[in-house]
Image 1 (cartoon, rainbow, N blue to C red):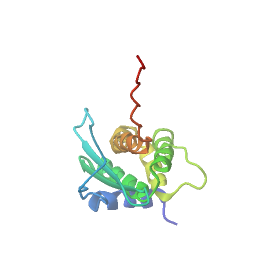
Image 2 (tube, one colour):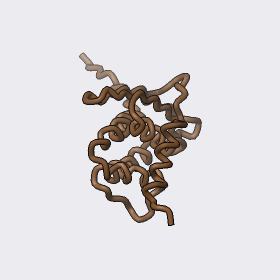
Image 3 (cartoon, rainbow, N blue to C red):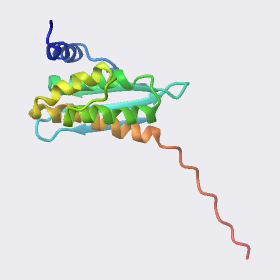
Image 4 (tube, helix red, strand yellow):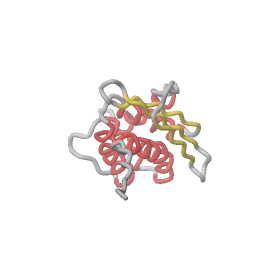
Length: 155
């Protein structure tokens, strides 16, 4: 029987070698750029919404295999989801990465994130695109702020 850790290493390697959702968006609603100070990895997250208000992501990373693979996995997972739902789901990825915990019916990408948990020095690499994506999703998920009505005093 194959060790599941090897399967998830293969998934991460595939996402590193062939990252998904890397083409820049023509008209992103939100752009978030973030860098990992210790190693110099950089990530740029662009988000847009389609006609059905589903997330259209682009995640461009410049850095190590783990940050590139994590960005690709996350982009693939949030694509086509409601922004609020995708933002909530990122907590599952964070728990897998930081604590090695997952719900019983966790999707395969989250299982790959849990495999990174075994390497504490690499967690920051995976957190970089996760945090940038969470910031971008929070901005897209915010309800639009209505302009305040001007108060007119009767004098």
